[in-house]
Amino acid sequence: MNYKLISRLVLAIFFIGAGILHFAIAPVYVKIMPPYLPAHLELVYISGVFEILGGIGILILPVQVLAGYGLVALMVAVFPANINMVVNYEQIGFDVPLPLLWLRLPLQGLLIYWIWWSTELGLKKENQL
Image (tube, rainbow, N blue to C red; front, side, top):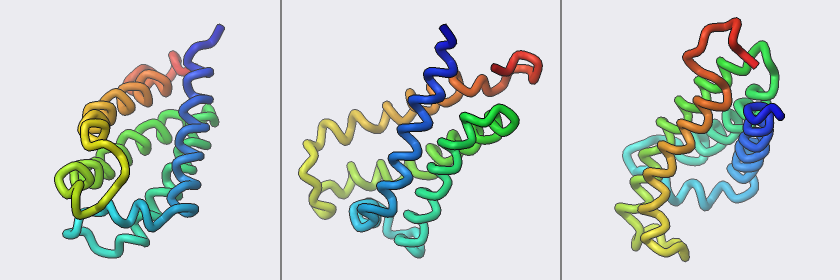
């Protein structure tokens, strides 16, 4: 059984779904944007597009590694929004318990590791699945 292929399929579904949500419920994502960033709605849409592209890309062998690096970069880029959601919890007004939002912060690191492992980032080209 090819666990990395299954893992990439699950990741693809996750990221494509999350990317679609950036368009379907954009106001929710806009609420968590740090105030120092410009063009909140546009950044939400851009991140949604890159989540969809990354999700598709990790399934296409010739671009799998590039898509993996792109998704890792995206996870780093959206991390300030996750921090903002915790720090400004009361002002943002989510119905999610605050401890779950705190738990989400280290889970971002696990998600990055999952992308790294699934797309075999850092391995030599001949070892790609």
